[in-house]
Image 1 (spheres, one colour):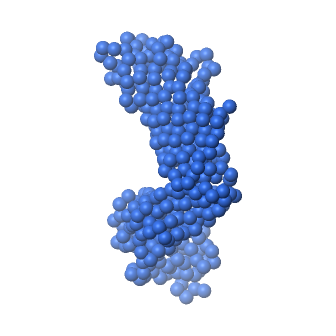
Image 2 (cartoon, one colour; image 1 turned 90 degrees about the vertical axis):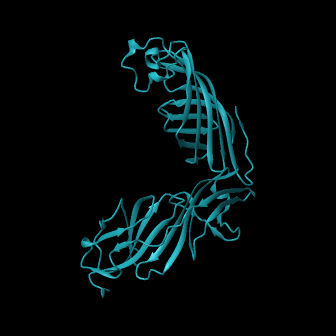
Image 3 (cartoon, rainbow, N blue to C red; image 1 turned 180 degrees about the horizontal axis):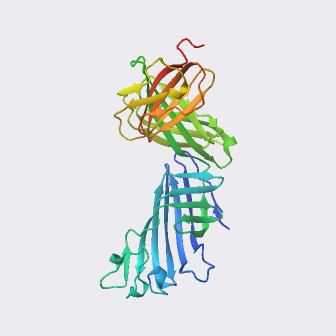
Length: 370
């Protein structure tokens, strides 16, 4: 039986858990090459960072696989810090790159096992001893760790399982924040510039999301606020705020439940994009006989752009969402009826770097189409 204790989430909610490593997934296989014979792990979640620490001892059984004498014991020391985590009920899921430091025993003679395994580096072998520390042991580049009151599972290049001794979830927690700043301007009147911030955040509540009183975004001035309602399709809290001028600094996500618990998480906006493409086609008000001739072109000197998003919409509710690595972009949606359409070309950068959108309008058929 484990102890389960809630953490007061007055400002920076903390998740803590620890336990023991138990075995690899092949622990019942009589041909297994090694087995875990003891180890421990711990996890702390604070200020938007999941921190995992662990170590375990591994008994070498088959030397032709492990490259270590049978009967010797190696030591693995594991560390991981990641912002990529979420809750599934009372289970915490963490994904990221694990760093491994290993104390390894070495064979006196490897020649019977040549060619050597691809993971093994002969340069690791010490000159005067049979054991040495390997500071960056390979094979742990990607892992997924799942922690619950019932235990821990660790999957990736290796699969290990363990028990949970202590599990201390928060009453209320914010996690996985995303904020995009977007500079937007009108191609017809390029002095018509506006700014926006789009933000999402996920919430964990010990008593479920029905117990959430509010979620909001607090601006760096400590006064301006934006409500963040729940978005059913994503299961997150969302807001889209338009601004007269760029706002920089540290924003604060805040959630409160009906029990009075308050959770906060900070997020700093990076640079805002400068409001101009060097070149955009079509020109504002350009007429296309049919939509199958519609091609978007642009030139932009903007760093760190990962892709471009081309949108087309009208007053009837039609919306087109297209993506491109670079210019040009051929419209590939359904045929457009005659009429006026708005469009936007967005240069997307990873947050917190700002995005840039150029807005224009076109006509299909003729400029006098109804």
